[in-house]
Length: 282
Image (tube, rainbow, N blue to C red):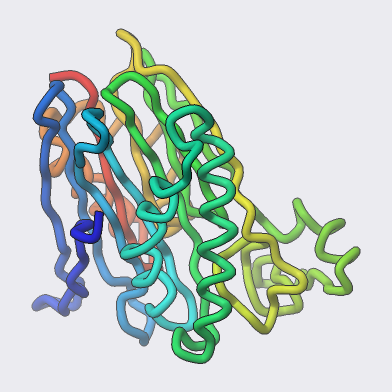
């Protein structure tokens, strides 16, 4: 479980557009294939998006592990998540009998481990959206922050995650002694700083932030076509159905992920942009 897919930071290409890191893979037991594409944004800092995309065998079962980690104030926390979060989930004794509880526990223990590593991991943090596919039959999605998972069933986009925005969770933040700023021309921010209300890390804000995930489950059936995981660099400029419509018309999931990323670039998304497409059918 220590050989999870790693990310190499994108490099600047000629003409000003950041080159992408991309790849693909497939299940050894089912028709499922996946592809991913990541592009550095225009902000003047290193790439802060990391991902996981792979299949592993555990206890005779095949698990598809997919994740997007979108860091802020550095890449140390998303890099830590890339190496540790899935391992922590699968170490939970209850994973096979109660995946939801195991995912919630692992998210929270991983956040505590990140905070205990401070200052080794810096003062930054990361959002996360994770998906675990069990034998191409059961799908478990969890998230903190504003990266998003969208499932296509019969061509209809179904959002499997919840965007954790400061205004939505204002009551929790204020009850913990924090505040939400809504300055003209800017998004809502926790204590005038962070644009999400849940995240890993962020030690300076942690007393006003949550790290417990929302968890959703769905069955993979004959109507299930594909799953899209993407950072907010996609969702800031694209609706769920628009992303699904792009991905559905392209059979190769790597090309589909790249097309979603390219469309976000064409719509002038300036953030780091990361996308994974998991196709359940040939």
